[in-house]
Length: 279
Image (cartoon, rainbow, N blue to C red):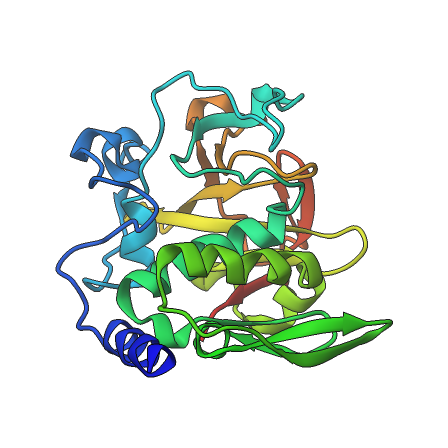
């Protein structure tokens, strides 16, 4: 009977209607408008933010809550990130207590939090082996175990799809997914067509992933600008990147012309072809 009640409670939450406005499930109270990314970071002079659909992934990222100006980025163990010069602001979300929420994991964490707020049944990520790990399976009592190089299905107790359950689901996903699996999770997009929610990702060992949190464009010149957020190694605060090469742009990065072969971020040089988009 308990299992049935858990399943019914889980189904009700998984099928719940989308709440009005962006929701950030890890926060006890909604962020104040002044804390949100769009209010804290104005677009470059002469530019304006691209239009976004209400309830979209991009709108949700545009409203990300930021910690107080000057807050340093910290590692999962509380130590300071060594390279504070690249940190324009720190996203108000925990880095976890283990060395797991690194670059690709931070992208997956934010994507999972967004989907949890609008449609939990859509949360899933492929592991590096190709195994497709669904949150709906996890709360229904089906997870995975690792045996050698194999990832195999495994049973677990069923539970309601709470935010605490989401975090329990994500920890093993962080451990067995990464930049390589994330690069396969997204579909290639030309850099000139970048939108909020796209991901710059170099899959490999090592690899790196940076999430496009916002996009602005200058209507006169057509120049596009990006706001980028990342975690890094070791696992650390998700932070908005500062443009250290062009300080006058603050946290914005100009999209290079279509002939450019590379896109430089403060801690990684991506190929211009390494931009992807979630379905």
